Amino acid sequence: MDAFSPVPLSDAAYRTLSDLVYRHSRIRVGHEKQPMLTNRLRRRLTELGLASFDEYCDLLRSNRDPEEIEHLVDFVSTNHTFFFREGDHFEFLRDRVLPEFARKLPQRGLPLRLWSAACSTGEEPYSMGTIVSEHLRQHPGLQWELEASDISRRALHRAEAAIYSTEASAQIPSDLLKRYFQQGIDSQAGRIRVKRDLRQKVRFHRINLFQPDYPVSREQHVIFCRNVMIYFDADSRVEVVRHLSRHLVPGGYLFVAHSESLLGIPHDLESIQHGIYRRP
Ligand SMILES: C[S@@+](CC[C@H](N)C(=O)[O-])C[C@H]1O[C@@H](n2cnc3c(N)ncnc32)[C@H](O)[C@@H]1O
Image 1 (cartoon, rainbow, N blue to C red):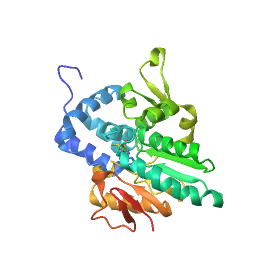
Image 2 (image 1 turned 45 degrees about the vertical axis):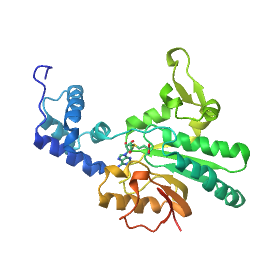
Image 3 (image 1 turned 60 degrees about the horizontal axis):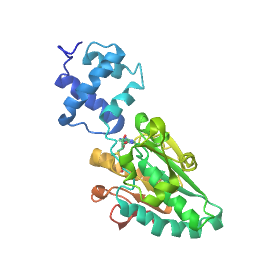
């Protein structure tokens, strides 16, 4: 393979790859992604020393290297996210959810459990973490645990590193930026990093929303699962909502993105506000 005769990706091979992605992650890869995927995968073929996409499909189908499917999903998944995205959800967390649970949980000796279930590169769970930390400055006493998960290992590595660009600072209220982020110096000048205390509070896991069991507590008070169901078909959404609901305590909240209302999806949750649902 060279720059003058790049390896072609036939429609048949593309269909095989999109089927494999769908079976693993339920992400639907449309035809519009074909050029982007072809470029990215050509590099992957070179890294693996393969001469054609057919060989690549064989490798994936044979399951000789079970982690290869994860690379493929990484190539197609959209990790776009930012701090305090859909800000009214964080206001609801601050103004309604935290005061409610802060009244109930400490007297029962229980921690507040929060989970960002498609956390991408970490902006969402760290935004949640700053809101809880702020609450605790005013009202100490609440114990808390914060889980964050995603199917993409690449995104999770970036989330754990917790280093973000200067543009990201613009999304963070200035008092929170001062309190919970460090400014980079020397080679990291112009970047920000989440401070260690908050970084260490978040437990990251690789979880595929379609795996049979989620390795997190089934007693979550808050689950954020936002801007991921848009990539799934209706049956897959039903399955995810059902599975996530089983991980909520009665009275616990599920947050989905504004564009992902559960309209048309059978569920047992009460609708509270745009994108916010509560287990009765
Ligand atoms: C657009 S980002 C959303 C990030 C964040 N929740 C937000 O609202 O900004 C979608 C994330 O969903 C993840 N994802 C896609 N399919 C998944 C699956 N089957 N299980 C878990 N995560 C998945 C992707 O890797 C990606 O990081």
